[in-house]
Structure formats: structure tokens, C-alpha cells
Image (cartoon, rainbow, N blue to C red; front, top):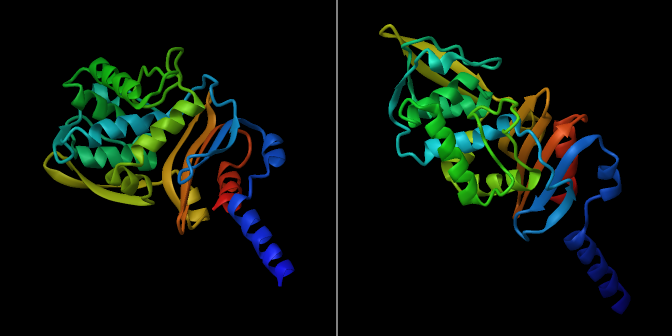
Length: 267
């Protein structure tokens, strides 16, 4: 009887305190990686957490947050020429199109449309993109992102546009406190209407986050890619009472399969 109880306690202790296979993660071709248990607040794995990196479109998390917190999500935005001076990923708006701010946020988060992100910045900056960028940096400071500086709302590579994996983790933890942000970041497809010359034009934003289809417990958050940043991902998964967040930067591995494999170990 005592032996059975001992074995049961041993099994429970392994299941409760099982750790990530750090040796396998160390061998992966990933520039930086953090895995955090959001319930226990424990960092389960960390590699180059303080390294200064290009955040690519993970930047759009802050862009979206400022829009969500602005109280203007139901306002209409008239697209200007300046809002269209971006590439490569775009929704395809035209000058004088009229779009709801909430739809711009979803386009920027779900499909990572750069024209949507730039439109958000210019609109909320009262026509001045630099004013919005100042708001982004103020928000980063408020969150506690000590090694971050933004120069654009989209995530384009630039000398003074940088963050660190630990800062991006703080950003993600802050963002997921917002129910609307969570809903948007966990959306596969968003269909919406843009008014063009008085006529309704249909647009569809398909998610860039393939983990949402590959792993049933995935619930967001944001993807990113540039030549300098490489493939980036902030991913969250929830299963039962378990909740985990991953920040992956400059991955040469398949980021979806890697994230899924990590989640399967910890939740």
C-alpha cells in the first residue's frame, strides 16, 4: 500500500513539475526564445531574452492596443495618400476610401496589413504619424519595456526600431489582459466593408498565424517577418487551467511546429 502511494505521489510530482526539454530547444536554430507559464509566472525557458532585436510586425501589437484603448474604434477613417506609402503586405485601400478604425485594427493584427497600421497611426496621431510614434514609445515605457524604441507603427526594419524578447513578453502579457485584443488576435478570418466612391467594397483579412489551424489550443497572438528580423512569433495557448506564452525571434525552424511542440510539453 505504501509503495503504491509512493508511486502515485511520484507520478503526480512529475506531471506537476515536468519541465521543457531544454537540451532539444538549445539545439534549435532560433535567434531568441522565451517560454512562460502565465499561471505560475515562471519562465520555463529563456535564450537571449535581453538581446536587442528587430520586432518586425510584432510591433503592431502596440499599434493595435493604442487604437483599442483610444475609445475611437467605431470612428470612420478616410484613407489619405500618406497612409498608402507602405509595402509589401497591404489590404489594398485607395485614397478617399472610408474604413472603420476597428476594421483597420483587425486588418493590421490578423493579416498584418501595413496600410491598415499606417492608417491607424496617422488617424490617431491627428494626421501626424510622429505624434503616434511618440504615443507608442510612451505606451512601451508604461508597460515596462526598458529596451524598446519604435520609429514606425508597422514594424519595418530601421536602425532605431528595436525591442528585446523580454520586452515583447511584457508587451504580450499586457495586451492579453484586454478581452477585445484577445478576440482579435485569435481570429482566423475577418470580412469587412470599405466605402469607395459611395459604394461598398468587400475586403477579407486571412490570418498569418497558421498555428491557429495547426493547434487547437492556440489562442493568438501575432506573427512577424522581415529580412532582418527573420520569422517571429508571439504565441499563446490555453488548455484546461493551463496558460502559456511563447516569444520566438528569428526562427530558422518551422515556427508553427516548434511552438506546437513546446506547448504540448507544458500544457
